[in-house]
Image (cartoon, rainbow, N blue to C red):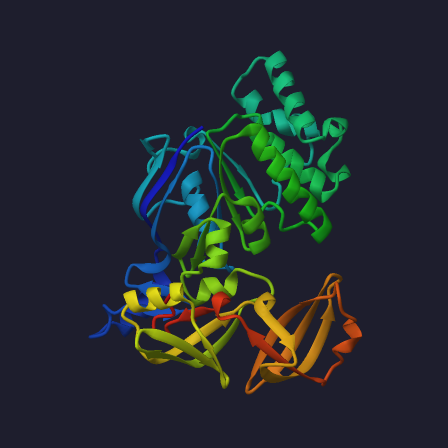
Length: 396
């Protein structure tokens, strides 16, 4: 078991010779200024994939790196594994500097998205492979393989080849191959992304139970926020190679650090109302959203006052579950009504923007919200988020 510390980790992919030649022609007075291309920072050294990544992962903690494709989460994981060279910064595992340590000597195990099983070997031999390489006694290998198989409920498949297994069973074999090594750190790179929705839910529950059984340090990468919220002790939300927020699932949901985190975490996505007006009178704040005004709470007033915020334009965020659809509030038209079983997702159009509201179907008839019908929605100011339009940071 081990603590993992990343200090100011940075990854830069250098340009190849042809790209350097192209850039050489463009160099001039502005050559030193970093530019943005496809949301990645471009410098004279190359493409910056990960920058200023720092986190202290406690022993036996389950940390999830989450973000959209291309945000640098898998690159970060591969640097921990030793599969990518660290451009600058320091990586410590169990108190030892690992920057120049070979992957095989880091005492980590990695589970890949594509399983990476040997097709010509049985499940037993796939799980036992690393132990055989380590020249472990046969009886000890057999004991470890069968214990891992029992933990993962794949004992009945030990004599089969991978091609005879389902996707979920193959993923369990890949996890079993990692378990038998008793690594200090488990690294998982989107291990459930190739599974269908039902199996993904099942495997997510299996991972939670597995974590309790083997009780080691996990670093898990996913683009699926549901996986992040259900699996992680803490979540690291990334964007364009930069950490946006680190916190527990409840913290990042209830107190998103900025607009990006607010929009990324939560399904359906948070509604945003730009150009809303925050007004301060004698230390008391009110918020106006699309013509509707509400008073803020004492706690919100105190936070805004402490931050030195006065009357200004703000972007208001309200989660779909926190909108109240009824006969009071802001007029809107129902564009689409989606019945999701216990919930009804109403896609509304109000003013010049689209809004989503989630309504419980427990005490209503879903057919009472037909397309193109007129409704009104309101909000509870206790549940809103206020963002600075310029910095996009959460003001409260």
